Image 1: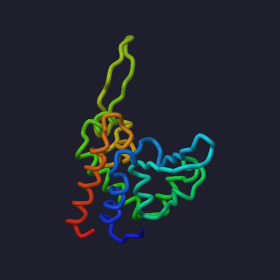
Image 2: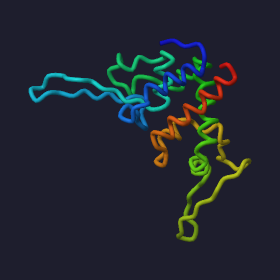
Image 3: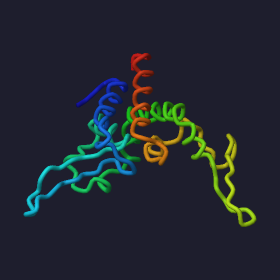
Image 4: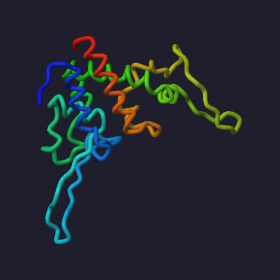
Length: 168
């Protein structure tokens, strides 16, 4: 389904992963085909992460028509060719950074051994390797171990509401 407004795309993507059984981590889309005892192909189900759901809602990828989902697309090319996708991901990243400060802190910390002891150092703006909160990719939030399904939905909801308020 094609949408013109960013908020409509975000709402559609959110709806597609609203069931926890349809949401996944670390891959854009996972295809699971169940086979019967006699080897006949049965039902096929799909799970998508936050980014995969956006690509799907924008109609950029036909997950269901791809034979090998993980190797079939190049997100960098998708994003470079679609300014609207880049804009939507940026908006999601802003909301994610606001809602998930622990993930931001984790992304800007470095763990290293000093004198045989593991120490964590928090990076600050200007430090080499520091990532501004709004620049942390949305998949880092989707895939982080402390983030739950409802957190991802909250990121989508907050972003869509902000964009609707702006008429976008």
